[in-house]
Length: 148
Ligand SMILES: [Zn+2]
Image (cartoon, rainbow, N blue to C red; front, side, top):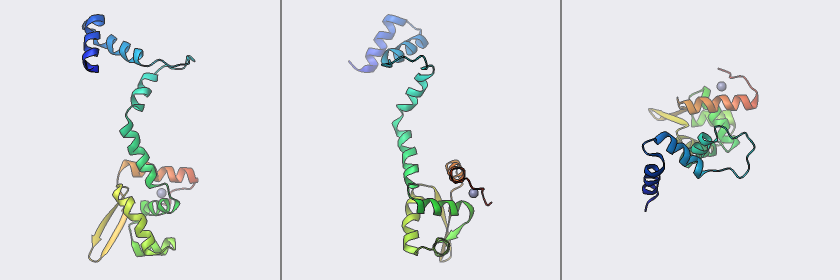
């Protein structure tokens, strides 16, 4: 018997058509904290969100892209200016291949976007809420004002 079938049968036996009470009882019966401290109000919502592991993987991936100080410097620069690899290299005093090495994962993760104009390729931070939050977070943590 599948978990869904068991749930449906329990629902019929104990709660009739009162779905709300059933769901409430079922989730509470499923999860009992080993220690009761009287601070567990709203824990069900937290528990439900925590079970959504895929969303946490997405957040971890995002942070992983910025788990390198050089990558953060490049990302932060590109939050303010659209630049080509050569100029990014000059600003950060790094080799072009080293900059390209960091641009690739930033682009793959959607944190930066590129635009080709003739032979030149320009990079800038993507216009997304994630990028705005990371931009703000970097400046908040570093306690610097946004130069823009
Ligand atoms: Zn800024």
